[in-house]
Length: 463
Image (cartoon, rainbow, N blue to C red; front, side, top):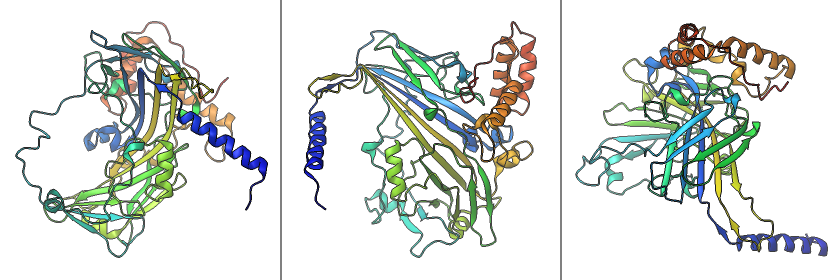
């Protein structure tokens, strides 16, 4: 097909602009801010601790914040992130210049170490039976000698999954949120209550680098929890897995892992249609990278909500047996928001000196025992498949916006703190993870009560 003269000239103009932008002088950013938003359910929300899951500690959304600057601070680094009232935490989250915990002396050193023994049995693909040629058997001892089976590769492009900042690479660095006791912010202090939202204006102030302002739209809010509604062994011996669809998900990573029949052996199954080894594919992915992996059939598409783990893998893992157990993990990758100041000049001849950038990443994770849903059994009333209007970001099928907003309003009213004291007590009770502890904590906190606090507006149901 021949292009017209006008189309040819237009294409040439677009290409010339792209080439000019590639030649644009770009410096910075001097300050970077990363905001990781992780929604958890099932055993994932309890750190894989079955006892904590039994006590109700299996869900929530956490924040992990990191800020870094090229400018040396000359003092202990500090930062404050002011979040919207709709987040129902804060409003000020504290970051400090404490580095990540260091490994114990000698850990990770390439000195004397015990040569690994055992094997990894690798299965992949959805279906009640494993395709011919599976499992792929990986001998750990051979891998330690540099002998890796052909066709075993990672399909995740590390260049397209950048690493967050760290104190090793930036002169000034802080992370959190930090607890009042100085601990790191992976615990209850980072938990966003049900119905909380990050939609709205955000402000980050530091005693080093630039001060940052940005606003999040609903398209980049925290993701809804992903939960297994079916996780059972069927007659064939396979494991039937069905989960809730997560709005705005860009793809799903599904896998199971358990001990083999012989000591030192492990069995790993992935829903990927193609042979791959991406055991670490359960953090965050840029949307364009998730889209590529969906096209290459490494990830399940955002419309997929069911899969079967083959009986050969399930039996080899010992799923359903009391003396053994396999874990199944599911991640829904979500949108990513990026901001930069100042904006890129439209004139490619004008240098772009970036003062600061912000990256907001979202994902939703769940984990359970393969073939026997412990988290569903432990939820009150077996609510694994029950609706929670505060965990939704859009009305479910068949419900109009008005009725859905009324449900959300009723649920928020039932959770509303009655006072400053009850809010503190509720947070303490919720942190305990025991059923009813939040209500008990709020009742206890009522004894400390002051004036009634005002409930923040619902960003999904504006009045």
